[in-house]
Length: 388
Image (cartoon, rainbow, N blue to C red; front, side):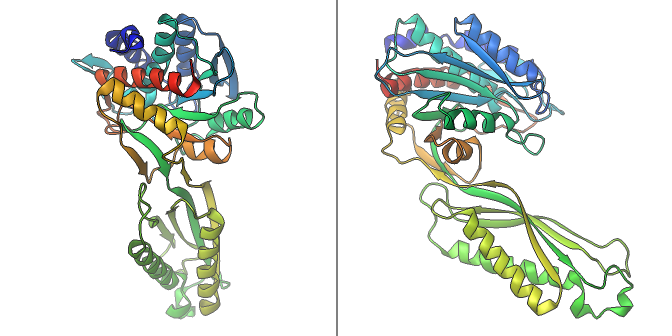
């Protein structure tokens, strides 16, 4: 066993995770969660700075100063959770910690702290800085990425300097690529306004052109399915979640609106996606005599951190040492803070967490064994990436 790993105690990790899960920190009111993380860091001897990303909603930063000459690594997670709702009550049952936030992602934050603490107890002084950070406002739509965006500002200004970021969530694999994503709404309006349908031919009804728009989306989806997928995060995809129109059986349904999500692969940009949708809207508008307007929100560009990047290699070797197997390098269609850290913060990023199996469910739980393994992986990867 590597000497550092002897300083990682799964039972203490389990206890700290359970205590963290007991702290309610729903998005928008996550201050108590940030304060818990800060106290945990202080207990382990780290100097902590807290900064409001929004009033009463602080980010947490702790710098473990290196002796100089090495790369800087930033470990990150979010202190907020989705609403507790009907999730199972916090408890430890056998080798599992149960409750809202256990997997997503208070367990990962605790593992991050224990990784740095193990290095300290083992007398390891890194060459480069190690940053331990927690952000607020992650879970959408209540969260607007307030904490992540503020941390990105600090990274751009080099008030916090990092050569790579590891986000402590996701499956027990190196998640190094994600699709881009944006929510779109196409609004279709008739110049006639909401008048009696007896005065309007069906061919000029916005509802009919909703059907044409959906047919265009079906055509695009066919093209995406036929194209070669990205080797890690799969193919481009488009889907619809809301179709809304009308308020009375014989009143013209204007405006009509179609809302959905468009996800695109690394190598393509939101500008290109926007141009595709605008071409469709322009063409259908010209055919119909109606107004087609495309609106966008929550745009995130895709990212891909190369397999040969030093942070990927460090996690691979650490995983082999800790768990006896080299972690798989994967991509996901999901969009998260990594997309922002890469594009807005300018720092190569990957995810490595204990699991991605029960997040957002009413039976959320996390394996204590996996949390201990994550703590070991973070510690050994920091040693290799930052130098000792």
